[in-house]
Amino acid sequence: MEGMIMKTNSFKKITSSVLAMSVLAGLSGCNLGGNKILIAKAEQLAAFMVLANDQVLIDNSSLEYGSDEADKLTELLDTDSANADAREFYEAVEATMEYTVDADSCNVKKDKATVDIIFTMADYNAVLKDDYSDIGALVKAIKKADTKDVKFTAEFVKDGKDWVANNVGSKKFMNFYAYREADIRIAMSPEMIAGFIDQGKSGFALTYSGQYYNTPFIQYDFYFDSAVHDYTDRNIMLHTELYKDGQKLNLGDEFVFGTSTLYTFKTIATDYYSGSREIFEGGKYTIKLLTEDDQEVASESVSVQETVVATTPAPGGGGSDLFEGEGVYFYFLDASFRNEVLDLEWFDYDDKMTSEITYTSDVITIAFSIEVSSACTRQVDYLYAYCTSDDESAILDALQNPVYESSITPTRYDNGYFYDLDYYVNGQAKSGFYVLLISDATTGALLMYACCEVS
Image 1 (tube, one colour):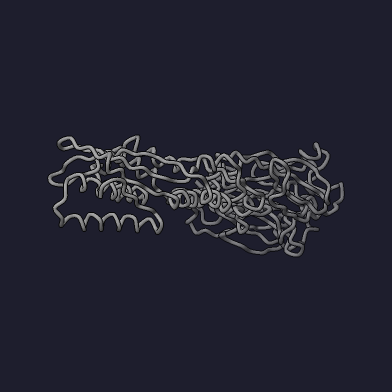
Image 2 (cartoon, rainbow, N blue to C red):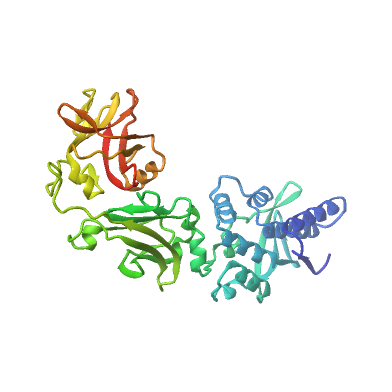
């Protein structure tokens, strides 16, 4: 075993470990000098380093679990927290590794010894200077790359009759794994970004059968897979644009891809039309998600239906004056329906309200009462949704899973005609917010929504 001893990682990394241990097993029954035992130990350590398994390295060295060095090593070699691109890069670099143990460098001083290990691997730093369109192209470049040598001087201490690696986890040892901290920057194509969009959750907010009716806003929520957080440091800028019948209307805010799993584009009619209109004109509206250089990532369209209504209200109708609470805890989405409304409020059957919008949790019936003119006979559908927060995204999620749905027409009482939009909770209301959404049972047009609180 004089001179240079070469081992090659030509099979799976685990094979290197098994071979190194079999070398030791073969040597253990022989009457060999201490240097040869140290060389075999160095071979084993080199194989374990290529294996890149923190547990194996800690178990076969003087490093102790729970120490700062052991924790840092575990964190560095943890592949579970790395993204898929990073894992493929690590494996590609490790597949190029070979090692040579320099037997002539073995130096023993009493209970301490050192042995040089020369690792040969792909020069990944040179490879990473170029740009790559995908991880596959980077892996191919690693396989074809020029190589570089990395020398590591392994230190051992005597433990009884055995030699134990003593500088696993040191700064010099950790430098061997510098490729684990390399900045892997794969160019993100629009198609790759689009692949992170959760199509099951993304969509236009508060539409009915995929359309808007007399809507004061247009909103699209882009939901992304949580894996986008791995790409925050790429500083990939995205933005949205709104089009009507093919003509660009306005530009949405820019945002950094990966900073959040939700991006919401929302535009308000009164803002867009500078107060001259309260609802959007009818037509086809398209939201485009674009890169910084205007490459299209995604495009989604929605139809807006506008109902032409009289400019003067029906007798006794809402007119131009705001109802008490309008724009605060309830909103009209249909002008013709608003014109038929005389009065409206959250109703207290059970004397369980502490304010005009707040019930106590022992309320029996949550109820919204709408008084309408006698000319109003339309049937309406309504639903209640529950959410723990008044955050907009929480409300939109809750509306996808209503807790109660029903359909009614106005009821005639001695004092007028009323929609009784009741939800019987039998004293078991949850603390939080209840959202009421009302639509026309015939046309599907959204008429209004309201919100109350239970505390």
